[in-house]
Image 1 (spheres, one colour):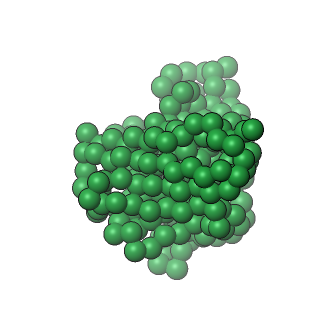
Image 2 (cartoon, one colour):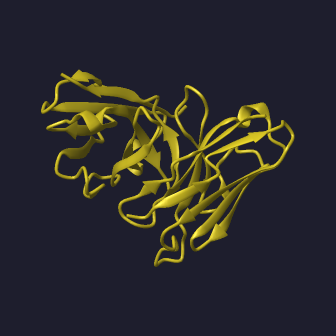
Length: 116
Length: 112
């Protein structure tokens, strides 16, 4: 059974850094592109970025590129999202997804709240 | 950025009715390889989004055939024939043709 499990969220102060993880199981992680998507409290969906199956290429939403970094460790079947200099508008639920095309599997999401 | 405009914002239906959701793009979503990277997702209450349709009209594995995606260029439609209780939730269209990839604002399908 394919599973994606995010972790690392929580309450964080503005300007801080945070690293989210997504542990994959039930499939050969190194065969798939992966992505991060977030959903604001108002339910707006935003694509954050993708990473190629071998980690050699990443693609980001320009508005986030300077602060967010996507990486992966195929040996650990884990996807990461490094967030830096977080702002209140980064408050959202963050999802990792497997890309085919089509995001055919999603994690349960992890909440990040940016507040002082 | 490509703007996806979904209409209606909300849709009230009776079980067994047909529902239709439109997704209009500010640019053609046909990629240079001829493929159109237009997808539809359903987010049920309290759940993560789930893939329904990819490539405009291809149903993902396990998606009932009452879900039909169609369209081309800038105009796309998701039709749900014979709405069932498990179809209720928020539907999003998504494009992965142009960077940055973008979502529509969503259409809430609810019972009348």
